Image: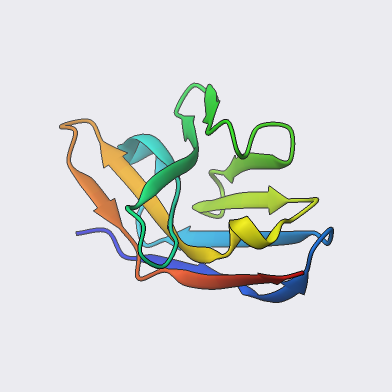
Length: 116
């Protein structure tokens, strides 16, 4: 099974920017879709952004215009550039993959805390 390791979380102030990275133990070409989900305390896990093998992207309404997802196939890495961060972006962010058989997998997560 693929191993997903997230990094880049931390504590930032509202309005600041941060980039999350996810490195996969296998080639990203194995996956139809890779991306990011998040889960805030007391809430369900929700999609943030995804990018397909064809570089098509999807964004949650809350992320569109502020977040940018990208993939580096040579490094097996998926990045999420976040700007204009808000306290409501505070959550554990999970890297996500979906393979050609539609099997889904999440990483262990990285905490992002945005202070007001």
